[in-house]
Amino acid sequence: MDEEKQKSSKDYEITDKEWKYLTGELSYNELTESEVEDFAKRNRKVMASVLAEALSLRRNEEGIASSLVWALGELKYYDAFNILSAIFQQTKNPNIKEKIIYSLGQIGNEGAMPYLLQVLKNPNESLDMKWNAAMSIKLLGREKEIEPLMDALRKKIFG
Image 1 (cartoon, rainbow, N blue to C red):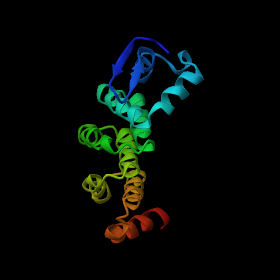
Image 2 (cartoon, helix red, strand yellow):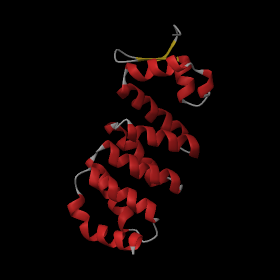
Image 3 (cartoon, rainbow, N blue to C red):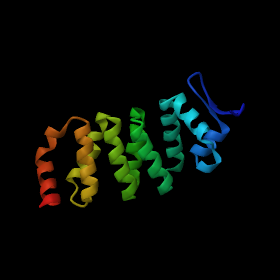
Image 4 (cartoon, rainbow, N blue to C red):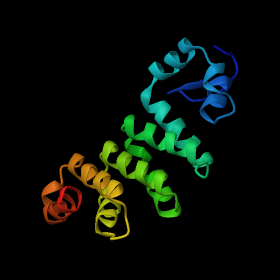
């Protein structure tokens, strides 16, 4: 591992090389598999916080932003709610919005409900977006609250 650290605290350390990878300055091919595994094993929460920071810096780059949003959901990083909700409100990009809706359900933050309900009630949202919102609400354990909306969505999808 590089001796120089880009970020450090008593909780984590990230090498310059790892930071460059996470912010897109290095490609995946420039890291060894063991370097990626070592970083991932050190601390999922640390990784998630770095991904959230990278997302705040790269939010306008669709490919990178979509991947970072998805990763935050997969890591179930509860603290990502603020950055995800801010980007949801700001972006017009439907792909990023759809990934945010998915990730909000994965992280399990109850604060996501207004955004999820907004998607379900919006007649202009795609069926995919609405389905993701419904599944996220189910992950939050609140599906009973949206039964009438779910019935209408099922009728649209399945006829």
